[in-house]
Length: 97
Image (cartoon, rainbow, N blue to C red):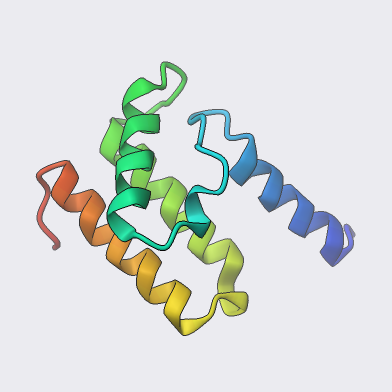
């Protein structure tokens, strides 16, 4: 069974070297939810390797990051990333379900 450290490295590797999206370095550490959403949208629209539509690819990457970070995310960081989800929906002209 892989150690916890190697699984951490696996998810970090996916976030940094996604097969579907070329992410801006440090995108998930940005303080502005709009900047996070703009960057993810730009990456998703520019990618020719993604399997889903740009909105789904961008939202999936953001959700993946949040799920993998889990309990280590501070409340403030989680609020910023949740706000980035709303900004991403707005950027793609989607409404929250």
